[in-house]
Image 1: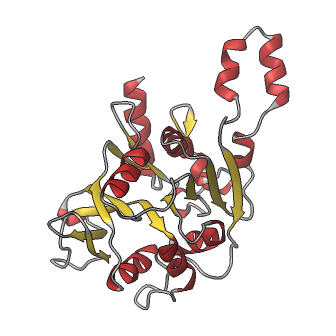
Image 2: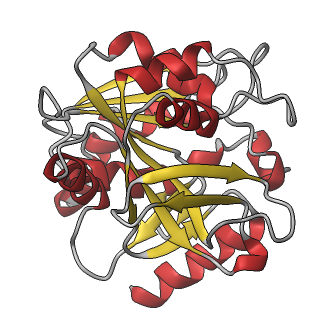
Length: 275
């Protein structure tokens, strides 16, 4: 049972975005625009609806644009007032009722999805769980709902302290297949399954509630021997293999993958069509 209300979100955004080069040479991947907002802000707005009070961005060493986006821009505010455009001040106001923290991930050394989770480990108390969402994607919903809030509610309703989302994809496109039991609890996840090896077409959505034990596993587990990367899915598999339980649900909304040119262009077309 969760010992305290979940109030922290970890959002890793330290990747170089090599699939989006050359634009990501000068624009951080998480700051690529979808409509008139950066990718990352769709994630942030979802966690804010869940009542999250502390957001920990795990950033690269050269990150500056993300910090600028979420702080006040006094010269811009002054200009808008002088120009009689006060109605636009709300669009550029800093976030309210939330504390923002920036944790730096070194550009050398360990690589993989568990690295930023391990970096954030020291900020998670022993009896605490936190939301972890990768920052190069989001799920566009037709309603005003929050996937963060719904995953937290599911985990708490089941009396657990960990959970994750999957998203349905065609079986021939599965990259990280989740197997669950009849009670929708996690059994295992297979990364990069060979043909016929994937147990389901439920793709890992990289959207989690993780407890302290999984954070510790992310910090200490060695690299995956097949791929040489430190993978958060290894930490989850290890946690469940040791007797832990984790809820699994299907995420709501259209999957907007923004780490590739095709995915980013699709997200912009969908958002533009809704405006």
